[in-house]
Length: 237
Ligand code: C5P
Image (cartoon, rainbow, N blue to C red; front, side, top):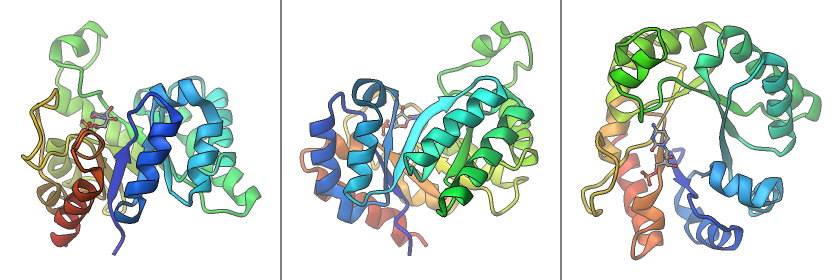
């Protein structure tokens, strides 16, 4: 059974992040590199992380004209990442360009294409923030609209909040991979995540992958925390 835990390496420096990754790697499925670490440490950090044998999720949320996004995706494929993110609000041409670039660049290099994940509505947005943009003001409807747009453009995975898993599963193709942050076991101190699910609940609801940051990297014992969270997630299947 595939280990569905992706550890968010939300740490500012390469050495600490690599040290954590090496320690928890036997108990998790992949590592997420976000903007903070990537801007500080660059592609070289991704190469070092890949050099440990770890799978990498490059979470840079590309959003630009289709040609630029296609080229950024091609660069990510050359870095040999296994997952990456794009904003669904970039539109269907941009989404199609991202997926096609992932497939064609990987084929040229003779490796499997990374999973291009669409980000729908950022969970930091509420109805008022959406209204400011001038379009749909109902968050659920906008998430659904962007999810359909992504599926129609050939995107094979989406990032979604724990509470979006069930409504999205109701209409998306079963093959769509859902990657879900906002995972808490109840053992952590409370933090800024408001709408959370436990690892087992999220998997039962239909998540494919769980992104877990603080419950692992800020735990007293990250290795034990990773083991426990992975067991909860995999015990549910
Ligand atoms: O520490 P925590 O488990 O909350 O980390 C969750 C990770 O998932 C962070 O990297 C955060 O930026 C990311 N994320 C999120 N909510 C979203 C999208 C991404 O928490 N809607």
